[in-house]
Image (cartoon, rainbow, N blue to C red; front, side, top):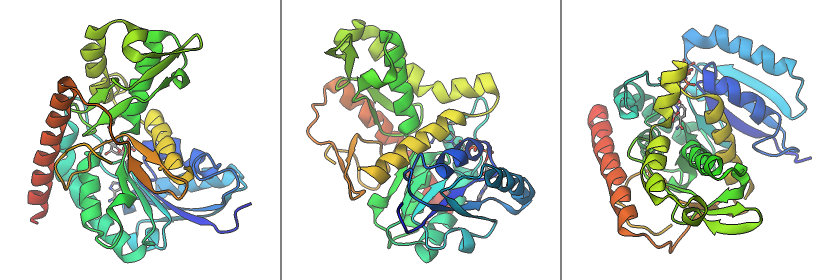
Length: 321
Ligand code: NAD
Ligand code: LMR
């Protein structure tokens, strides 16, 4: 049993993603099956009564690793001495919106919470931004916490990765675990580039490139990319709510990889851009270097970078910085 308890914050803790996420974290799926944790749960004041119900349910799970639960609406309490921060709390989009339409509503939250990380959390804290638009909110949080290394900040594009992997797996008739090295470049938005040029598929024991396994380049370069880019919108259209179960699963995958194991392609500086990474045992990470990028890929990678630059400039204008 690891002796030191980890302090783990989930914001938006009374919301729908948190409801799918908290049980997995509390039972050891993310930080380890022998790692005791203290959960810090932040939501706005109006949601505290709902949060109290979530706390009761967590208590009623009688989980051995969950040593304490601190539910609060105060940043100075929630961000104190954190080892990990999962920043979910913010407004989700509705049908017909793009994620960047949420900037005005959400970006101030991440400025404030970035400042709280700076003031109250450990300098080693690992921060995962989920609230949309996730890349730009993450950039704002990192800029608001200048004494915490920028490499400690990441945003959730693992959901897109899981979606891409699953689409390939379904097309090939294999389990998702038989598909590896799918890459999501850029923004968690409809300009993201799901890239299968380095993807390998295990078909009946043989490792094939994705193009050889699927034998339909037009699908891979067209419908596949559009399906992954538009999957969040498709879920909202069907459910009238944005993804929650799959988002929670992706959060667990992302944070667990950073925690348990951890770049150079040209993109402009000062962006939070999704890259393929290798995660090391000390929780540091490195961008997978040297992958060949053809002109099809480069054009798509440039388009998502251009959108991120525009979002960054809009976010900074909203914040008056
Ligand atoms: P939700 O509305 O169910 O829950 C959001 C919660 O955040 C609410 O309880 C709300 O009160 C709380 N909140 C609002 N402002 C807050 C603040 N300042 N501090 C703390 N809590 C605050 O929404 P949800 O479905 O859980 O989605 C949350 C966010 O995650 C949305 O922005 C959504 O678009 C985003 N999201 C991102 C991904 C991704 O892959 N990056 C996937 C799914 C959803
Ligand atoms: C998703 O990809 O499902 C989330 O970002 C929610 C959304 O707004 O699409």
